[in-house]
Image (cartoon, rainbow, N blue to C red; front, side, top):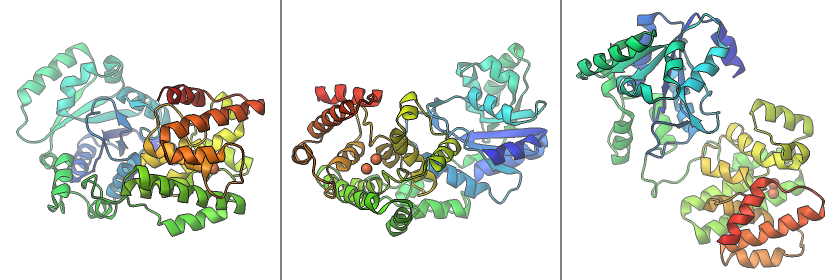
Length: 410
Ligand SMILES: [Fe+2]
Ligand SMILES: [Fe+2]
């Protein structure tokens, strides 16, 4: 983000190319370059969406994969930049929030062009705060050839009469390429070469993206050996032994309750669940700031509650884990929460019962329940943990209270 601010401050005009980029392809790149040339903008910023508000039907690929593919696709053009502004923002994504955040990073007189599909222009009055949006930036409506221009012109006229902002129209032949077509081709084993940059194609193949959910195994950017080596230097010996115990236990539970994919994910989540726990306080605070870990009053009062939330960010940035399920399991391994995923429950339970833990009251019962029914084990461990935390005179995190309410009813 710091480098974004530095490079945007210089620009008099910027075009913004938002999209899910799942995957980014040559149509996007040709469009961005055409807009840059026609409007003579200093930079085009590609902004991969977080959770899009308008396109929630399909399960989109993990944020980090889409971000990295966009970086790979744009790195050879010095006028192109990629921003994490949307993928790092929690919750639903609205264009107005992005434009406003971006404007703050730029000089006050910057001219912004927002590139969007012509289809979206028809819908623009349904977006969040459309009037304000239209007052902050110009719109470039791009279409593939053969688009019904008359209908579009009609809608643009209607909008133009109401708002002063300018809406421009551009036909881009390369937009005949589509991300959904690339995904389908990849799934069917058909070639995708020349539809997207070679580096993106290589990335898709390396991580087996867009293949049959059941068939593919999860690929990680670091192999498990490298992950373990990194952990060994980041953790105390005691913590490392505990970590290996959690990874083994999580794998065993996933073998019983899940699929081969779950087993692999459980191993990685188990290995990384405490990856930020041994950070010295100054390092922990620095990373929290840099990775924008949202802090609540409980985390400020009880610093031990920080490590799962920071751990998820460290797993993402330092151990290059893109899988949201794994990151969720790391994030909630201490507090728990209502309605947890299979992997979240497995890591929460494995952390409590792993074989290297010194014996304490209740561990054997937790072990028995874990191999009988995960929800019963969740309820038992949550109750025991809350009891223990109360004896220490500490407050209970609201996520744990929600969790116990939920698992009491299961
Ligand atoms: Fe932990
Ligand atoms: Fe742990």
